[in-house]
Length: 365
Image 1 (cartoon, one colour):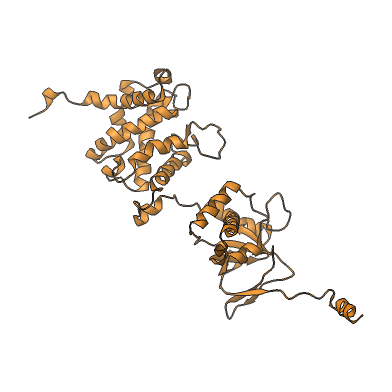
Image 2 (image 1 turned 90 degrees about the vertical axis):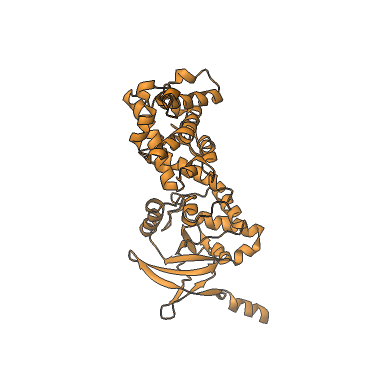
């Protein structure tokens, strides 16, 4: 009876909750108090949860559903001993066990309770870290930087989420090479740079290929050319011995400007006839002619522009003059295989410059 009496007395007694103390930076952004500190991955994984908008009805539910492919990519990234320097933004929602703040000491004490902190930013990174922990438990001992808010409303959480995902854009991957010059050590540099240039062509409203490039995971829609086509066409010309480097166009910004000016120049001639957006007439909305255009740009036009120190759209128009040689149309290449169509597109763009080349009798010796 004595044992049973003790058991009865202990029913309902709350078990002691483990806590962790962290030195923290206390700040205030747009009226929201935020506590920023470093914590172990395993603790963040244990305490966090995702509240997806349209699925959970609770306050602060702003997240999108997880994308498995992205989570697995982050897992692989982490397992290669990479980490994250940007913060993970969490919202503490456990109203029973709340963090204790010691402002004078700049410390925060968190109860180690599962599903106590809602993710505002970093859900895919945390899911990727969790999967990486399953394969390598030491990942859990690494530290990440966390910015924690307490009891955000859905409106407040949405404001933070929208700020991150609309006003702030990730920089192009290959920009790091322009900033720090670490090109030769990374075998993926040329692919990243070519992909960044393709992204510019696809996302810049002034680009002739705006919303016309098929990226993996996107619906086909009105897309005309696959990303792989653009990467394959550009990649050979972006390395240390490539055409862009030979004329000292090494930075992402100058390469983007050159590509845009070039295709705007071509488009202008088709616009004069109202044919640029006509997929049945315009071969440059197909892979072969696009690749042929890049062959002309890198083999002929870049050196010509470099010699005059002028890569403007106007200068490129003067070198192409499709109003003189005539537009290349789908009917000119539709019976050809891809390799032949590519060569025809290159030769057609080159024809005006060839016609302007002096004959041997005009040279002085």
